[in-house]
Image (cartoon, rainbow, N blue to C red):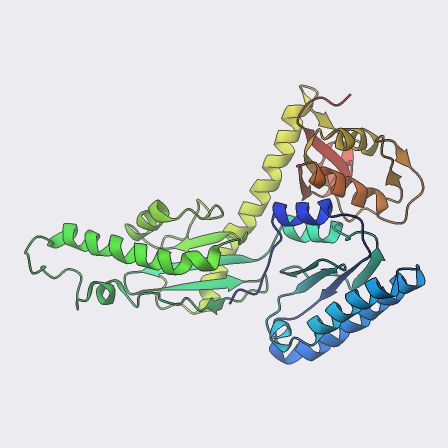
Length: 369
């Protein structure tokens, strides 16, 4: 069982597009250590009750507040849920929606109550996830590991995974001559290996469905190329670890792969910043909150780049102008919601990486008016 549920762009978009409704959003740090589950659960319930009380104080109907409170209480009572956590947890509950995301980032405990979900911390956690997956593949067996940014590797159970290439072929040695005499030497070995790799992929694929964690392949040739030929997982990194790690501990294999995951995150951020600079040259970039707000209302934002740690008070009027009214973080929340709801994507990027140190920028679909 994987311990991380990173939100996809579609997840974020659905939350942003939902109608305004009483909503409690809870963020809190958690621990993957099962023995600490009770402490995490209690901390969650304290924040959840605070959020429900804030809704009641704001005049939300008893029926809506009770529905949200009941859903939060049910989640708090789910022992299995709390036994499988990562380093951070996001919970968003409205009368019609419940969404939970287990995150590799340690989050500050916080609760928000209002008429929409609080998305900026979730965007930040999803933009540079420290979690990654490792597939260690050799002829003698395969193992799938998950690392959640703590220097360890947790083995993931993979039902129906073949024990080895030889076992999958029903032979003691995949170099043996076949009964027909056709599969001999390197030719026969590669036929067996390809069949074995397809079986490993078939077993692993259901566990990767809907995931966003980078997958790092640890394998030597020809297995590495064989697996890449059959895998369609979009987050399989081009870079892998080219060695046989059969006799390495799970944590050691995860440590080998960790630099590749970090490099992938950095490369993704650098590519976004370079793309922003390229489009800036032809007038399809916005580099200040006012311009970004106008573009967001028009649906012109393709990718919003925002430093979610910068606390912008204010809000965005329906015509795209900025208003000083609005609580802390309100401006960022409005920009995030607008960009997502109109089909754009959102990525957290530190302000120092953006031109002039601006905390808000956007790559535009067209030059905004």
